Image 1 (cartoon, rainbow, N blue to C red):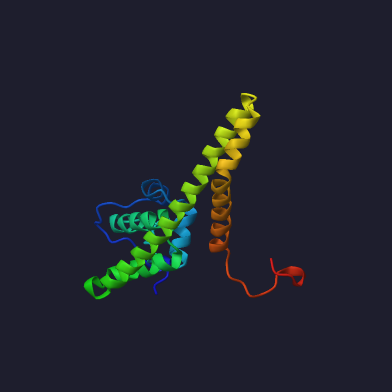
Image 2 (image 1 turned 45 degrees about the vertical axis):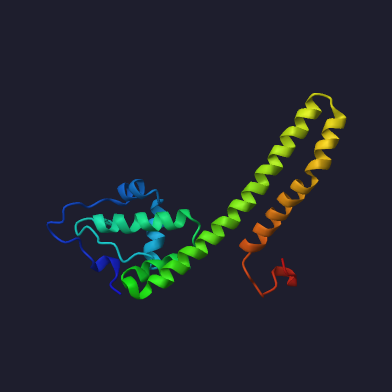
Length: 179
């Protein structure tokens, strides 16, 4: 792999962009652009020979827009790297590309379900507090009774999300206890 300091923009290239311009165009923070380069998510970025600053090409922008879209779906870095790597293999890896996107679709469906449960919880609480505001204790109690399954579903969705986002770590935390 060529280091970034050895890559120079080709002469006569039509458009080159600074890291700031690239950040604005892609919606990715400058630190994220540097990070993606450092982990090999994107190839080494050309450097301006006079300043040593990164110079992003139109092709880099296109790639980063794809990365930005994948990231916006919540796709893991590992899956994003695999997806980008597979792109150059066309039909040979089309099946795997479909699997990666289908997996991400299922993750998004689960997230939508969690968000819908949380939204229903908020709606129940709004109705509850409307009754409290109106000094309607019976109405508030009725809302809590009717909404208990909604409240429980929202609580479970929060716990489920925390469980799926918790990293698997077989090592005990400091003090010898697992967190």
